[in-house]
Length: 201
Image (cartoon, rainbow, N blue to C red; front, side):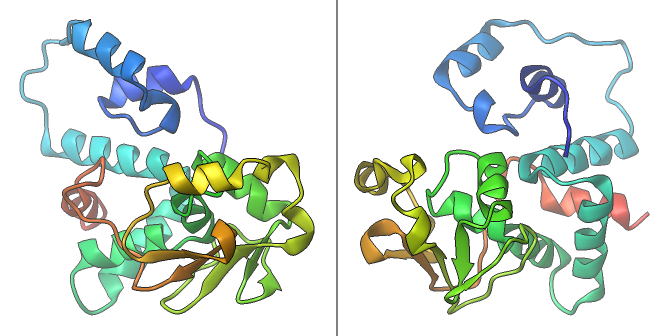
């Protein structure tokens, strides 16, 4: 997915949706910069819902078509739609590769998968949108482990903060999905319930 200047998008959305915006330098600059208001008052419910949807879409680097499909699938399934949406987003293979610390950004994780460096349960997968599930093992191909991309893997493992549902194995070159992929609504950089409201109109 092609996007514009990441800093400008983060400022417009008021959220650090890109890893590039999650630096202390950027956060301090944002805190010092006065918020511009356009004289439109509180804003409409639609505007608020659209903003949250854009935050979520840019966070995971998805096109509108992809993101819309995930939202509607979540609404069609039994159970809480917000939980279903977050599970689908977190369960994407490229997101799991990022969460496991194999790369520093989701965009790099997508490229890693697309270039054939990643396996799921011992079989190569080149589909970033592949949905992983509890019990699956996502790993770096043995042939790729000697690449410069993983030269400092041991140090990266020591510094990485993987979520509870991921268990690193094989010296950090494999990640077992110990639980259903999920992120707490309170820790997501967007309001999932508001996103669902946007697509429920």
